[in-house]
Length: 304
Image (tube, rainbow, N blue to C red; front, top):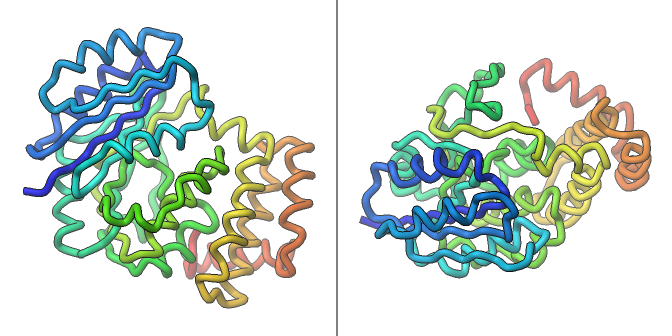
């Protein structure tokens, strides 16, 4: 049985920690190691982590004295300590079904994919499921080559929106530049998944095996208001697009999605202006690309 490394980075998520840790240790996959990280929390996180540190599965407990200021520095620290064949980054405010790891290990072994991820339910701060419509394409399992997956599902809206629902091969980390990932504090996970997907297939499991916590302290909220995530998305797009042989239609879809994203009410006027100045450098960016994006969404030809 291959080993799974479970990395749990934490910062000030004490209210959710016990539920999260219990869901980690309840995984029905036997061969696992657990790496607990804390980025200088100011709440009761350290006390809780020390309670669980005595579990035999826990191989490392790293408690920072100073906050790193970057989630992906914590990711890199955990990845450097991992010795498993597969890796699960279990964010500290989420919750998992006890079958998550075993199901995704099975999918990776059967499909020879680099990444496998499961459908996530969204939950609020007290654990109540937030109702969301699921498109038909996400109602069935699938395996897709990595480049096609990137072009269809990672350059517009990132459909791997919950790291806690993903298992990937440690061997694939050779293709990931974590220093580059760390430059994108709002969109680094997008570059991380793209870097992995460039190396092979991506598998999706339609069963809901993870719960993705939504609450007022999400990093992504401020990034969207300030337009930082949209600006960083452009930098990632220009970095990876030359490697993808994208058609003009595919380029228009990406530009159209980001036109749409820039004009959301959740983006401030200042954030909108900054994001527009960056994306306007793309020849296919503009209202026409937005119309094409909306038309394609309606026809279900390509969804971001």
